[in-house]
Image (cartoon, rainbow, N blue to C red):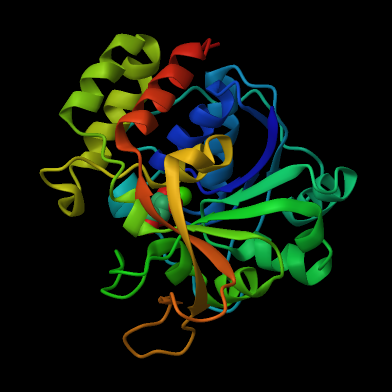
Length: 304
Ligand code: BDR
Ligand code: CA
């Protein structure tokens, strides 16, 4: 399958994205790196390890940056709960972290297989920016760079900015500025991926995975005011789905620049569809095929 290295901040939709990456026969997950974001780094890292155990995965986990490059950390505990997984308390992790910082793990993993690995980031872009700074050649080595973040329409933390970009705009600017093939899976796309009642009905057939993780996570996540009515958007799973099945997501070339100064717009991904492109920007999701992909992948997971 296609190789994927996933940088994440679990996070409820991150947890669902990790399960998707694990369950998809199209993908081989070569590592998870953690970053502070939805909750503090100690929680995102512990959650990554617990999820690896829960899903029965054999994948290295490396801990990364706990703070944005220059700004003070801001979490989204209101959306994901204080521990990051809503009310879910998975058993304490047995898996151990690898003995390398996420930044070095990213560099070394990409260096070992140039052109073979897709790098996807579904949290703030801090680790990615630090890795690019330390070893700019990762931009050549990654087969592609897929980011869940930004939007060309509205934001979610502010009217202009999406959480992952807003949390560390300086890092996002570095990531969008690097000369790799960048794919922006922004809110415009991810707000089409709603875990609504029909989706939840399909999840109900998944047994323990649903009872112990999906239902309690989604009940918590879906109770957030942003998601009233339509069901919560499973943002991060869209980035993983893109790597496995790019045919499910329509993209349009565009120039994306990250606003790092604005009084009202810091963290905005200013998207110009007429300028020389530096990214492919996702616009349209094949919604039924996406949920088929997700449920089929979840069905393949054999929980520990
Ligand atoms: C993004 O922010 C986080 O809260 C989610 O995990 C997702 O990565 C959506 O804006
Ligand atoms: Ca995330």
